[in-house]
Length: 493
Ligand code: SF4
Ligand code: FE
Image (cartoon, rainbow, N blue to C red; front, side):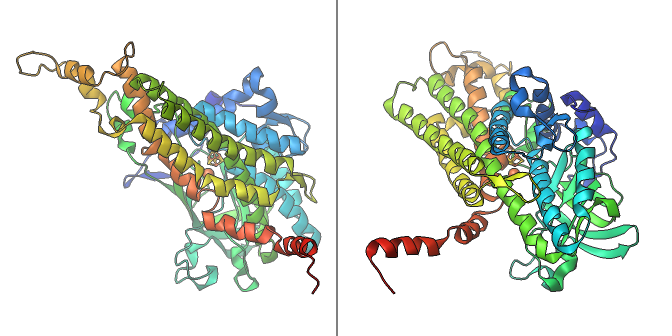
């Protein structure tokens, strides 16, 4: 099945026996759960758009492994053009969902593991690249969604992997067997983990020789024995459980998803192992995955930014304030910030280069600059959106009040709904409901369930700001820059 539809993807999830816990109990029918379903709809969009002729060039690509037409989310980038299309695809998905559509972590992991296994085999005579190529063909031919899993819980940040009181705070090998390995530990805040068919696990940081059991990369199905997940809750998530909830949800159809993924002695067969104690390649894998995912944010967050700018402009119209010059200026500023992020995503793609394995990698310095800007600009974009929207975004009565036909026993004998609609009316010709909808939508992005994906994920997803600063310091090449200054200033030492 080369390209699944969204519906086929959702049905394929039903065949998995994924163990999901939420609110203190196991959730058997997590696929139809109102809190989880919007995140599944988001991933389904990555499948549906691949069938739309309008987006074929962005959403699909030709596999270098099989020659088959595959979903770009399973593609190994073959050129800078592929890298650019990746960013444009992510912007498109952000525009269509206003959420995190989750499937990028797998795509970024594929590209990082592909090149790292090649170089590891060259040095150590291992056979991980062949393992991984076979795995990729399976992923592409079945159009799977894979969770690229990197972030360990990390425990005491003052101590490394091997020095933790609890060795499970980083994923590690507990047993080597003739047919494979047994792994133990967890991955925290894993985007899209529950609705992924499989997990592709990587180390979370560079590993020293003494801690080599932490240098491990492998793939297992999401329902592998010993694997379970605890769903991460989001602000205002239980609004989705309210009967008939619609306007109050802001974004009823789409959302993101994060979970804690626990590996309680999970067996990995030999053919699914991509790194096993070659500690000198853990850092390379981390750096490459992080680089790709930092590029990704120059696409996905920009797409969501487009929708926020549109929502802010609509809120201004519905408030009757759209002609004010300061409103226009704020929309211009939001656009400037958003397009600056896009420029970074495109720039690190244009400056990409081939790896030894043949797939293309982004420019690491520019990708880190991209993500560093993402830790800042979305906050300013959201600040301006809140400024334009007005305080009603967070003080408005519930949609049940607006729709209530309860008679209020005062002289006017109006219903509760009549009173709400009367006093929350905005510009002439705009329904109060439409004004509510756009304000609730902004509330959802700025403070509600989608704030996870647009705000805090912008800060910490793909690595916290300090992680990018470390990479910028490494890639910044200060020595060359000092020489430039010395030459021009006539300094001879
Ligand atoms: Fe994709 Fe962006 Fe979500 Fe990462 S944060 S998975 S890049 S949509
Ligand atoms: Fe992310």
